[in-house]
Image 1 (cartoon, rainbow, N blue to C red):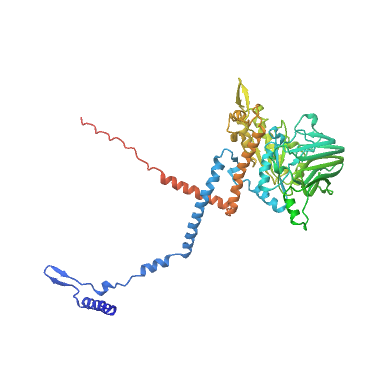
Image 2: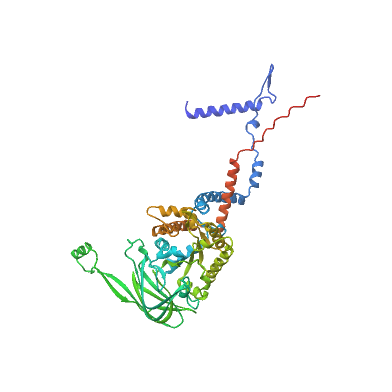
Amino acid sequence: MNPLKTLLSILSLFVVLGVIAVVYPEKGIQVGDLTFRYPKLTDIFVKADSTADSSAQNEIDPEAVIQQMMEETRRKQFAEFSDSLKFYEDFFENGRTRFDLPDNDPTWFDRFFLHLQLAALDSTVVHIVHYGDSQLEEDRISATIREDLQAEFGGAGPGMMPPVMTVPSQTTSHSNSGDLKRYILFGPKDEEATHGRYGPLAQFADLNGSAAITIKKRKDRKDNFPHVGGYSTIKVLAGKRGNLKLKLMYEQTTYETIPADADSATIAAAAAKPPKKTVKNVEAAAPVVDKMNKLNVYTWKLPDTTSTARIYLSGNAEVYAISADGAYGVAVDNVAMRGSSGTIFHRIDNELLAESYKAMNARLIIMEYGGNLVPGTNSGNIEWTKKIITRQIQAIQKANPDADILFIGPADMAKQVDGQWKTYPALALTIKTLRQVALENGLAYWDMHRVMGGNGAMMKWVKKEPALGFTDHIHFTRRGAAYMGDLFCNALRMHYDFFKFRDRHKISDEKLKEIKKYARSTKSDSTKANAKPAVKKATKAKAPEAKK
């Protein structure tokens, strides 16, 4: 059968069935007990009732649909962010090397990180002033922090150094000669001045005549600190009183270049051997002088970098600090005060201190103290400790309200009791007090005692091969200090990664709060869903009493 005949047959069948549906009795045909019915056309082709659907469609709010879609997108995004943020939050809350932060705010370092990022764009140097006791001598701990941050954010040089240095640095050779007399605020009384003009390093040198100060990068440390050389910005901070004349000589290194018209044989011969190096002493142009109310700042911007510089001074003046830095980036100033408890800042002329911080663009102040407080601390004098440390913090805050301040508490330290090394009993009370004072005043706190592993950790550090602690069970070895510096930088890097993560995903502080709220709600819902249903404890039915 061809297709046309097939179609006609099907149409004919539908016509016949339609006719039957029209003529077939509505009540059907009765045959015995059976009734045969045939469906009506109205039963077959029922008109759809669109009233309900139309009404439902009219009730749908387009804005509500859009809002629902946006909310679903937001929840999906929040779910992704909350998973990533959990990695950071686990460290911020439970990490052994974590920082204790005011209000547990993990964004506390943001302002400081912004300054570091802007340093390269603005060609500025951001200074971190690292104050501390004898744990910092020889540029220990500070040198590791400096190297790590300069590798990340740029920068060179050792930062601020005193004009007269009595304890050598492991990174920079420093020498002086001539008519300089040193005064310090953290030593014996006979070494103190009759005034409070000490500057940012809590010491100064009185110049009366002529003198020379030489700084150069040490080359006998297997180049563990490559960024400590390469100075291109040299500064001298001096008082306004008296008169001061300065001259800077520095080593300039030049390399033999191949003439532009050299033939191929000359180029090949030059490439086969190191370029010829010439080093000569060059006098820098006169420094730019920035005059403040109590401070004169002399600055040289060198056209080349150098790792050796000599400053010639003549006249009479108070010299507070010299600084050797790169063209931009970060600098870390090592300010070690042997025997100090960090209770001398309120005695420094605050206006001079403020001008010094401003001149050096100091954006982070680290106060690493407490070890010298421990032996004499007890419940009877703890209130004095709170007051005196609070006073120091507030003195620095007054001098530099734009800087962030971080307090590093004492490490584990031990003494011999009945022939056994044991952690100082007052260490826990000292740490608790310092942490409390720091947080109450808006400072971050880093607990070296916890970082090391708690009580007894120093004994383990002393026994390590090679040793991380000296046999006095108080100070770190150079290796131990470097390790502590690495731990500090790793903890800081977690916050910087967190800072970059939020910046990359445009997560504002407000949005961060919403994500945390979402994470808490989903965690709560998950906890409820996973909770086992309460099972009511069956009580034993009481047997009915027998009737008497």
